[in-house]
Image 1 (cartoon, rainbow over the protein chains, first blue to last red):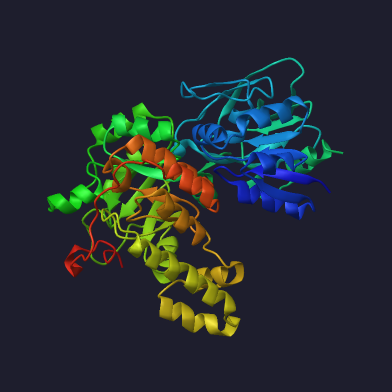
Image 2 (cartoon, rainbow over the protein chains, first blue to last red):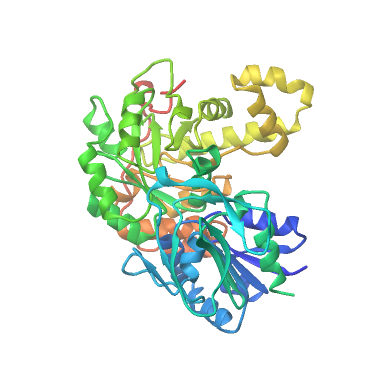
Length: 190
Length: 292
């Protein structure tokens, strides 16, 4: 059981908290530097990446978050959270500054507008059983650096990857009952 | 193999709006101001509600050219309004690939008995509600997100407060009822029984609940969040104020840090003039009574 924070500036943070609590972890919402200091790991949820990016600055969280990530704090980003943790993002707004915690290039709204959002089963590597994938105005992973390991694919394309203590997914496991990615993330803390 | 337009996809996008501010914009410049301020989505419309009130006449869906212009200007989701019951306006908005359709009482209703059958669309809908029964009727018709109506274009938060309290109060009351009592309660609410049972069991709406209508200050937004809203719509309150960009940023921060009065105090400093607003509306001026 670990004390895992969920960045609660904007987006689907409640759902991540619920999954983590179901897995018997202590989940806390993080909106301030003091709250960030109190957690062992951080989930960055889906939401609007431009909004979260701006709120990182106005909430004085960018510097302490970069420091914690550099010091090896495990982090898990889904959808917008992937963009926030990425090295860079295609189609980002000019002022958007991803945290470069993982060597991944993301493309915002990679499939198009909401009418192109979809559900499709995702293949988890090393697991026979498919996982439900909920893709909502989802980003695409367009490039990864060396040492980035593929965790899940959709028709051969990486939709979840990990490197060291950072894991990111383009879809929303928190909107389904399938908690295998959250378990994998929690295992990084052990 | 991929499924489009499922309820999970529709309501899921609303889940991603939570804790955010959706701002009314009438052109590409305002949309950029909203995006730069941290809006999680924009609502594209030809006139903000305060101007619709002032101008009078029939208010309709916006010009597709204007909606496309806003879509081209920003990367965040773009919503647009259709008249209550005007399913062809909704078809047009879906063809334009807006990210959410607001079947809105702010426009002139097109049908005095029926709302749009929202299950027929892949694009999700948000609908207004003044009470729990109305909210559940809209969800029964396929709405994937609810916003309390408030009274748009007034700059006066009192109606938003009334509707948020009405909805949350009725949810708490349902949760306290015996299962045997839910049948009659569903009849009284005029709402589908399975939805009434779901709400009684879970103690919340099955979709995201935002607040709209009359919010003008950071404190208004934070108050609605403390009353249980998942996020807020701000219409005339931003672009009818003295310094829209600054006010928009302040409302975004107050919505995130809604329990932190110190943050709300800080962001409320020197915001310039708030919209003047309206009080004491005549019954025929009320928009919230539109919808059935």
